Amino acid sequence: MPGTFEPLPGGGAAVALDDVEISIIRSLAVQLLELIGPGPGEDASDDPLAELFAEGPSEPPSDPVLKRLFPDAYSDPEQSASPRDAEEQRAYSAEFRRYTENDLRAGKRDSALAVIRSLDALSSAAAGEGGAVLKLSPEESQRWLGALNDLRLAIGSRLEITDEEDSDLLYRLPDEDPRKPMVMAYLWLGGLQETLVGTLMP
Image (cartoon, rainbow, N blue to C red; front, side, top):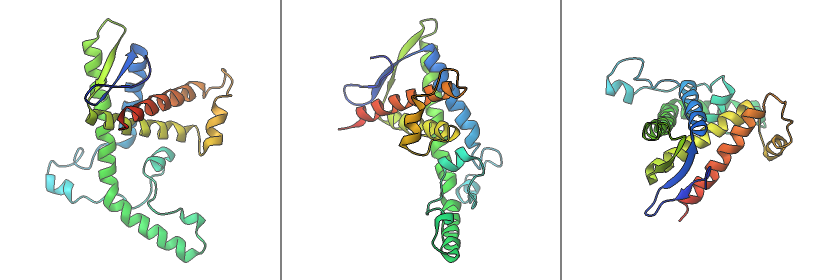
């Protein structure tokens, strides 16, 4: 069925996408890549040891989308019972972030790149046909699942969705609301994500 992932025999998943859908997903993945930024070795030296031992940031990102994609590992210090607890949580979160964020960013970059590359290959193979069926291996399906999740988190952050109630309000937005196209993308990606999860279930 168009617009939903279906399992492939022997593993993996397939979905029929038209040219517009391919263009939308690719554009969102490119924007996500730009937001995440280059890896520590991509804009500096090519020394693999330097990249291996590079420490990440200790402060959370200022951009609300990046803050959603790379949240603090420990609970919000603002919700702590005492100033001392808050200070400890900030210190633990900073330490955890310093040693994990670079790897998390690399993983998210790899997933977004996998989406872009598979869509580019699909577009080349289906040139002039108005769409095609995307077929993913089990490993590609996992990367797509990660990227779809990141895209929905990013859009949800821009729409200021924090809970299920906020999500329900999206269905009732009038067509003239300027957020409507972003809402439609958010809901559509949610459907893709849900059906892809279904193909990965044993």
